[in-house]
Image (cartoon, rainbow, N blue to C red):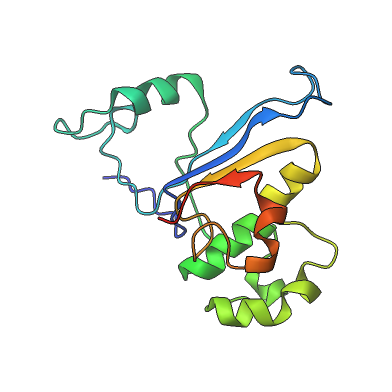
Length: 156
């Protein structure tokens, strides 16, 4: 049985549900990014399990792109999640494990980079978060949270 093993866990990560008024609908596509930790192949589009009834996910698969050969940059969820969101591999950032280690050199590592939601927000998108996007939820960097998100759901 195939297994999608993505080591970061987001209940739901909404990016760019709407672009700002400065950008036209044709120049800035809407982006919906959903990532789930340890999602098995039980849903129908992945030759699922007969007991898994997932009509809404089935519709989403028909209209979108599913990446079914997932890999992670580090076998620790926090490091892999931050690698995905920053675009920087743990061997470059030194972020291999805890969020405490990452907070120590965040400014230095991210000096000429932006986290994915921050990049979208800086480029005219509205960015929204629900669930566990970063290890601690909406952000592992409390002073940067508003730089990442236009709005976010209450604590999970």
